[in-house]
Amino acid sequence: GQQLNQSPQSMFIQEGEDVSMNCTSSSIFNTWLWYKQDPGEGPVLLIALYKAGELTSNGRLTAQFGTTRKDSFLNISASIPSDVGIYFCAGLQGAAGNKLTFGGGTRVLVKP
Amino acid sequence: NAGVTQTPKFQVLKTGQSMTLQCAQDMNHNSMYWYRQDPGMGLRLIYYSASEGTTDKGEVPNGYNVSRLNKREFSLRLESAAPSQTSVYFCASSVMGQFREAQYFGPGTRLLVL
Image (cartoon, rainbow over all chains, first blue to last red; front, top):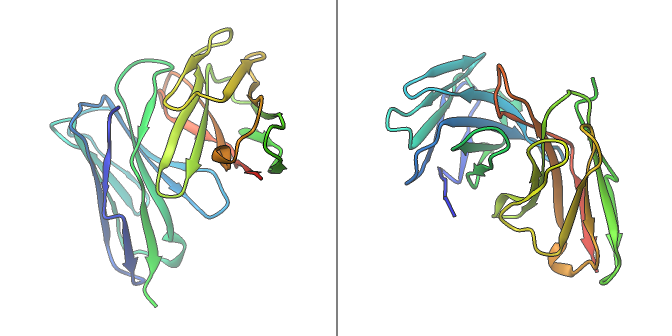
């Protein structure tokens, strides 16, 4: 099936740093979604992108829908401790009821 | 609005036992989904229901059945549980419109099969 390659797999952050992660695929997607999952919880939607080239912000989060429609990027500015968690990208190819394909996740941890 | 709710939160089964995981959403969403999440594997789709009255297989449907009871409820059944089905199960729902097809997740059911 389709694969979404998410990188990095994990990263350490220090409070105040900017953080970047990305998601790439060999297939074209019409919608890109970014989720955050805290331990013991379900994924929570952060940002949805529907158009190639689209740049969307949600507070300190900014995500972009790549112009080739095969990639997406998520940036977190001025990170804070509660940014720790797992971030997942997900792509959708078709219309209603079609299946999301998820990346493997980027685990964000705090530098000791 | 409670969003997407799932019961039970935790369950331990013996191999061969059956059980049904329940999911309900109060957002008037058309589509509902069941995923399993395993370490290092991300989220994998088991079954989905594009609308009331329809269900379709996802990536990993073997060993599971689903029922879309009505627009609100979508249940997942394990007829004969196996240790390989030990996982965290998430239900999700989605809507057409402003956030078309963005899926909203429940809190999960943690299942251990011994």
